[in-house]
View: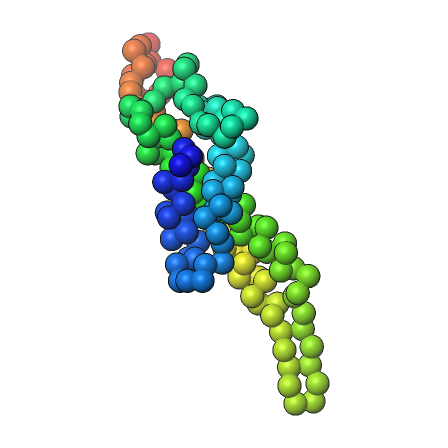
Length: 159
């Protein structure tokens, strides 16, 4: 069992691959999770490292809010799942892009262009969700008053 195997079922549920026979094997989902984590490392400030044997470790200088195990912090799991879904959906959409067609004769018409648009919209929704998750995760500062500044700001005091 690898460090990301525990996320396979969550990824399967997120992408809607829940009825047997599954579209993606567990190994394909796990590869998607590793690819997603690898793509997110810079946005997660390199909190994790992946070695040649696919072992994930925490970077010693990074700040973590949860003790290990698991190696992957709970707050980062959603980001990894969404990024893996983007990887898998993008590969699937690219593979299916060769099958997009539309034709029509006097009696029958066929078009699967809307299906391709739906896939693209699903990927766009995932990208927006990922950006929102990362903004919430990284921008958790608190507002406080600065000493020496008083309201209203930028006004000249009465002389």
